[in-house]
Amino acid sequence: ASEDYKVATGPLYRKAAIASIEKGDLSPEAKRELDKVLVQLTIPSETVRQIGVELYRDRLLTLVDGNRVLSVENSAELARLREFLGLRLADVAETHARACGPVYEQSVNEAMGSSGIILEEYQEALDRLAKRLELTDDYAREIFYRVAKRRLCDYAMKAVKLMEERQKLRGQDEARDVGDDPFVTRAGAQLGIQGGGLTTELSTMAEFYLRNKILVQHEEPYEEKNEETGEMVSKTRLIPEYPVTLRGLIEPKTVEKLYEQFLIQCFSAKTMEEKQRLFTNLDTVGGVLGLEAKEKAKIHSGIGSVIYKNYIGQVLSAPGGSGKLEDKDMMLLRSIAQSLNMPEQQTMELTREAVEGRVTVLIERCFSAPKVLPQSVRRVRESARALDVDLVKDLKISAETRGKMFAVEVDDAIERGQITPNDQSALKEAKRGFMVDDKQAESILIDCIQARCRGLMVNAAAALRQSRTDIAADDLVKMTRFGRLLPTEVSAPMVSSSEKQELLLVYQAYAIRDGAISDEEKENLDLLETMLGFRTGSPVSK
Image 1: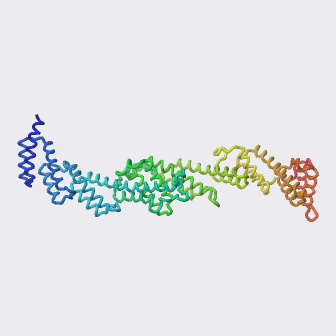
Image 2 (image 1 turned 135 degrees about the vertical axis):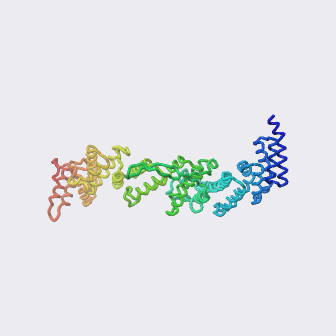
Image 3 (image 1 turned 90 degrees about the vertical axis):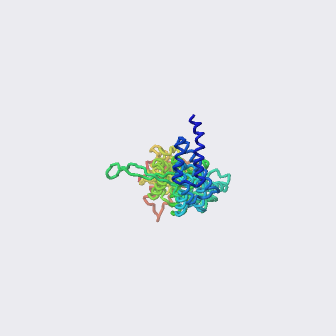
């Protein structure tokens, strides 16, 4: 019965209201007459509101037909109509949004122009227009965000296109993205990245967001310990919010790649001014793309790892460098870590991994060469010491490999006279550096001396056969250098006894100076007799 009553009385009220509206009579007297109809018909208030909204909508649509903008007079008329129909502005807010939204949206687009930035005076005009169109702040903001989102998407898609073109230019056979390594400088590595490229579009996108005041910030309380007093102090910090993002509009992997490429350019920009500008926009770019904190952290970690390893590798391998990380290097690495919000534990692990990797590379280079060179093994030892790398605990280098490097350095040091019976500091240093124990060091030293002396004796005998006594004498001198460390007979079956006798005579002739042989040379002759097997005496006096 109640519903039937509404159906019967509603049209009566509508007819009375339309009569006054069509006459243009919205006076207080007409309002009182309409209220009398309500009293007489006792129509439910919700029915009255619905009828009023419908009548208001019809008039509003007539006024804005053809995307016309409401004039001041139109707004005043609508205000009188709301009062006449007993409507609040909230009752017709959605009606205004639907009817006037397209006009406001068009105006926002026009205000943005080609630059996308709404100037202050244009913003004020838009505010006045929204008020005239009776758009609530929420609806006006929603329309503005909708326009902004389209513009942001345009910037991002241009950047995507540039990134895809750059990938094509790299070629299909390049398995690794050069973006993974900002220090790579081969052909094509920077195409589409600098001057008007991907970073330009994303930077413009960030500038659009900030200058149009889309970014929202709110204060968040937190506590911080006072280092002087030790007490907890209450503070506040600004937390950014991004009410408009592109999340869901672009493939997640593409979004991550865009952000990654922008981040790389933050570090590889040529000037400090450019670096600062890009870093300033970094958070905004990530926020607009819709990346969450954990997603950004993952990208930061990946890029940070590459940058850390490359930078440390460059410093440690730089020609003429110290071969270690100086204070200025550590300051730069800390700056990189702070820029990327990298955890301290991760940076420590990366640094450790890089320095250990450097020593490993040096060892691999030693044994990949046709011959293991003394300067190469010496560089391994010095680098390991400078970088505090333990060949056993950190790198798990076998005793055999360490022994080979030790043997090469010791052999060279003996030949150059750096290891003598009176000065064995170089031997101790090599033993400590390659972590060789006493037993292994003694065995290697014996083998080294025997092998070198055998080779020198054979070479000296060969020179003697060619009547090159000067060369034979030089080889014998070298033999005595090795023999001083281990004065014992050298096994050389390929050299006959008669040749050994001749070699001894060659050295005697070499040792004579001004018709005499010095005490030192006498000792060398005694040592050579022992090494050639002509005496079985005790070690030579020192």
